[in-house]
Image (cartoon, rainbow, N blue to C red; front, side, top):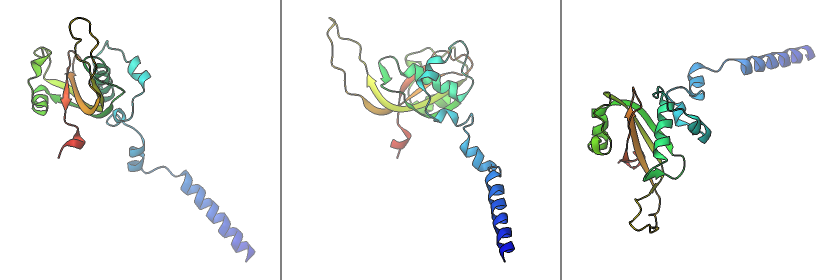
Length: 173
């Protein structure tokens, strides 16, 4: 009987070791490892954003997200902290224009752009910095608000850029 107990114990230990050392099933492994299609959705450290070089066009979704974040952290309509990346897509200029329902030549000349653009949607606290009033008077800033901005730019050259507000997906009925 003692021999049977030792055999059973040895069997259990062997089974546990085999189960613990088995490879993770591929579908589960894919959900645990960020890929090109999901890495941009994880928070991007400020150091990564600061280290990005502007000398080449963005070729990945992560690079497109970094370009968008860098360009939405400055100017009269910017995020107060690092925004959350909601989506990054390559789409045609025509599709982008349909999504934002405004003429895209409003602030930048997009006529030199190629047909495809990176279209990035970001969410966070937004601060409007209006132009200073005449006479060097310090105006009181309006309070920041929670919202979403889009930023899009040419895929082949990363030239130009168009920024504006867009309805956050969570706010869509």
